[in-house]
Image 1 (cartoon, rainbow, N blue to C red):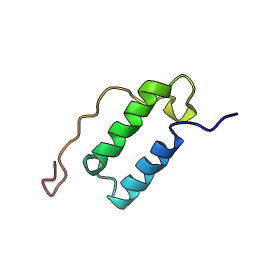
Image 2: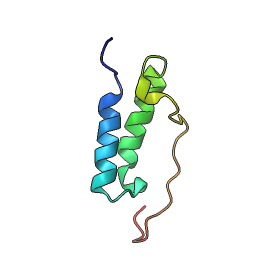
Image 3: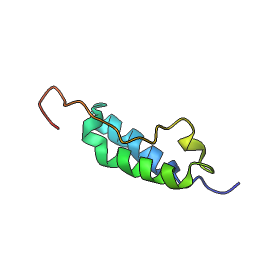
Length: 66
């Protein structure tokens, strides 16, 4: 089986969420990169199974970061 084309984005997303204390808005660029990869490779990418392809809407963080 060939390498999953979106796995690196899934790993980057997990790393970003851990580093940013799971405040999704601070990882919005990584979420978008994952979404773009899944839009292109969903039929062959296992990490894209169940991934919502609609653009994410983020709530502001408690410190007002948007």
